Amino acid sequence: MTRPTATPSRQRRRGPALQAALLEAAWDELVAVGYAKLTMESVASRAGTGIAVLYRRWANKDQLVLAALEHYRNSHPVALPDTGSLRGDLFAALTGMGQARAAFFAIGAATAVSGLLADTGLTPAQVRDRILGDQRVARIQAIYQRAHDRGEIDLGQIPSAVLALPFDLIRHDLLMDPKPVQQTRIHSIVEELFWPLVHAHGCKDPARAS
Image 1 (cartoon, rainbow, N blue to C red):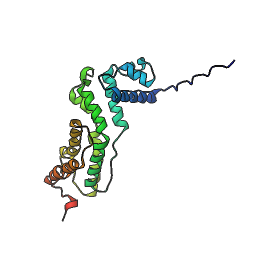
Image 2 (spheres, rainbow, N blue to C red):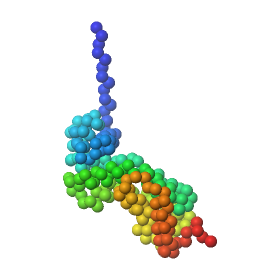
Image 3 (cartoon, rainbow, N blue to C red):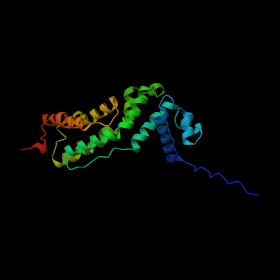
Image 4 (spheres, rainbow, N blue to C red):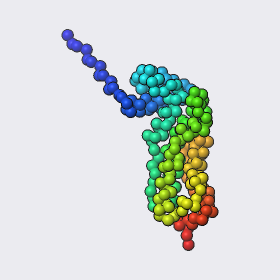
């Protein structure tokens, strides 16, 4: 008599590995069906686990989706270029951000519009900050610090709002129209908006120095 073939046992996931798998399943479900149709049950099914596993970590759908957006952003960082000049770094960073973040902003914006705020207890600004993360300032500071060390700019002379401007404008464009940002738009942000403001605060653009 032939014995039935045993079904392979599913690998037991624990701790951070389980947390990541659940959040990745939530992201995949969000992409596949959208926020309105996503349920705790559908995420649990996609993750191959029980719904109680989700509820032990997140009180409701909104908390899970917010965590999934944060996880996706943190696990898919945009590379910080080092081209040897601030102009080159800005063009490369904004181009990479405008391409790599298009899908993320499309999902994030659609999710927020669909009612993410319902059960989070957070204000719209707090949800925005949770989705975008504190990397908005911390990661791009490295670009400007290198430029300062090369003598291209003086960070003591330039307001933080000016330094954040190119990246804030790209984020705005992606929120309004979540498609890869065109090179003409990036050129306009860097050459027509950013550099004139830098010059106005006493920094001479070395690429244009006589």
